[in-house]
Image (cartoon, rainbow, N blue to C red; front, side):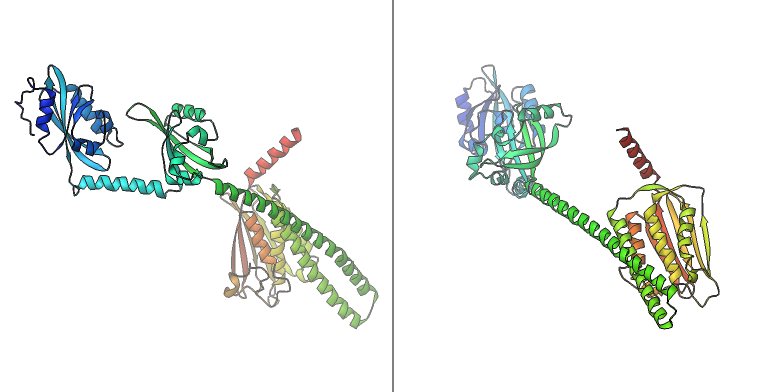
Length: 497
């Protein structure tokens, strides 16, 4: 029935008005001033269900604005005034028309509802949104559930029931949050109520149906529904499998530490035990060379000496690798001038290196802080290589070592005018046991050790070379003054204790 502005309801009874409206093809209801539904027809109930008041119709997520508009109209409208509203209900989008009238001085409202066409774009959007929400809840990796302030569960997704080992959704519904949460729900409520964002994140333990526990990371939020009741929303990521993986990693890490310690001990013991008899052999060789005057014997003794020196170099390199990889860096102030000349002096005792011209240029306007032992290993390897690969065809062999500061790094360059390295070998000379030249009498560990030590110090390595011109190796090493100060502070604190 279409109501005209001049319709007079004052002499009509409610039953008469309602009977007249039933002749239409719309869902119809009469609502009193307290927003309670006095009468409704079958179509109205089919659309909204068995509802007793207007609040139940409007109590749907996402339509707070519409709810406020409806209540504003109900509170301010006069006789025969009307207004239409678009609202959600279940999975539908409907048009609700309200008209005010008075009967025996009492205000009533005629509510008429039209179902929007299935093809209406807004109706389709609502259905798609609902379907999408269900899809998210069913396919997410999180346990999603909601509860009231007294702990009653009012919603949960299927993963919640499955993870907590409930045989059915009905069995899960019978549980309350206090039975599920292995913790203090009262404390969580207090934290939420005092939170500015009404949301907190914390680890929780949930009790399974069989009594077991799962560990979870929960986002918990709270809001008030249309009835001013507090509703608590839980989104929990199950961390149980991560906990098991964490235990596995800890066990594996412990085993690796044990193996690493055993390997460190083995390498140290091996290098020490091998060097002792090797030192004796080299001593005996020197005695033989001084006492026996025989060309044949001297020839073989020299071969033994060369082999012993080669083996001693390998053992030293193993010891170097042990110190680089298994010992924590000890940061201290390094006197680079002194350190470089000490290394050079060890090699100038060799007659073959006496013809080399040594140049050392250290910028002493700054202090360099790093691990001196590892810096010494690096320089020792590079200086030894410069001697080994000098060019005998050149009248003068030169080795230059320069040290300068650049930003927060120390740049060390070692240059030699030796035989040089072919381009095809440049990118591989730092590989383990790689030899770029037939002149190499070593084990191919030298530049590998340099690269390992620099990596340990967070340094960078750049190698340049040209055949028959020479090689230049540049290193950028962080100046660790801050780490040195922290280390000194810890030592001081330990002494005080």
